Image 1 (cartoon, rainbow, N blue to C red):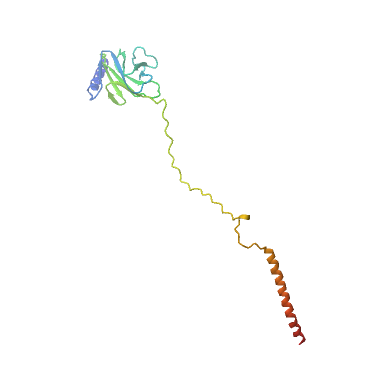
Image 2 (cartoon, rainbow, N blue to C red; image 1 turned 30 degrees about the horizontal axis):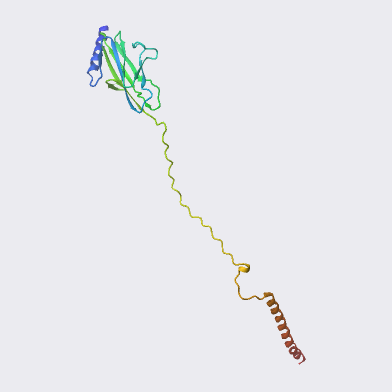
Amino acid sequence: MRRMIAAALLALVCLISALPGAAVYAVEAGEATLLVRQTFDREGTPPSEVFTYRLVPRAAAAPMPLGSNASGFTLTITGLGEQEIGPITFPLAGVFTYELQSVTADRSGYTIDRRVYTIEIYVTESLEVVVIYRDGDVKVSELLFAHSYRSLPTNPTPAPPPTLTPTPQRPTTTPSPAPEGPKGEDAPKTGDDSDPALWMTLIVISSVLLLLVLWIAWRPRAERRRGS
């Protein structure tokens, strides 16, 4: 049975190695060391370039490097640097799977690479080790995290207020006051200084006298007509 398991593992390792584009890493018998690298694109002066990563096993029985605890193995990398994980010792044959990701907290101005790498380690009965890295479903050649930083302006220039086009308005015209006619001594002279009341009195008297004359002239005629 042990020989059958060993033969199956060896066949699986050979098959994986033969796959086109497969990222396979043969290491020393019974041990594996993982290399983690980070790049850093910066604009401005970042306050910190220290990023934290954590390796966790998918199965509790998977061997872990020295310094691990219940949450996994944690490491830090500064700037354009790299860091090794391990060696991880494998006393028995098997297939062991791990996940590696950045657990750095979000920071203002930073874009942190949050990808999750899957690490598959195949160990044969003769303790030969083959390591495969995956980014999602794609095999990759290294464990690389690319971060960036863009400095934020401390005193941003406020945007100018929008230019408003004034609405044309009709001109307000104040009507000129009507000129007042001359009064009192400023009135123009007509050449007639007589009193109108006197003329009215004369007209009334003349009318009465005219009526009286007509009545006297009419009375004898009327008497003669009655006597005849």
